[in-house]
Image 1 (cartoon, rainbow, N blue to C red):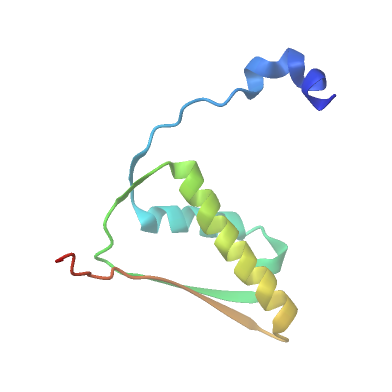
Image 2 (tube, helix red, strand yellow; image 1 turned 90 degrees about the horizontal axis):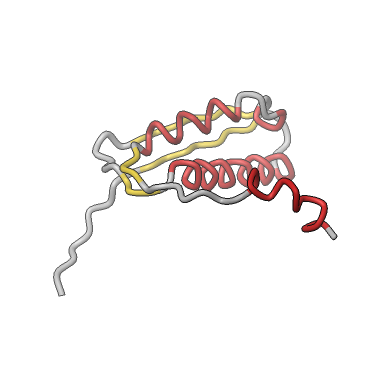
Amino acid sequence: MLARSFGAYGPCFKRTAVEKAPLDLGEVIGEVLRLLDSYPGAQAVTLDVALDSRLPHVFARSGSLQQLVLNLMLNALEALDRSVAGRKHLLVRLTRVETDHAP
């Protein structure tokens, strides 16, 4: 039924291929933080962001990565809202971890 309702609009809702591109994680997080400015649950929360200056660019779809980060932050805000009384604090930390890929 739903498919028939939108059948005439099909071309408007078709998924288009979105290319992956090198992304700066700091910029992605900054964009998400701007979106959270208008989220009511964020008003009673102090957000601290700590980004490692050595973060590499990641090869991903911009919208998908933004959605992932936004979902993680919204989940954290909702968990704080349910579990902590008074002023809340959320730390977002992104660090580069060096690994040894030797066998």
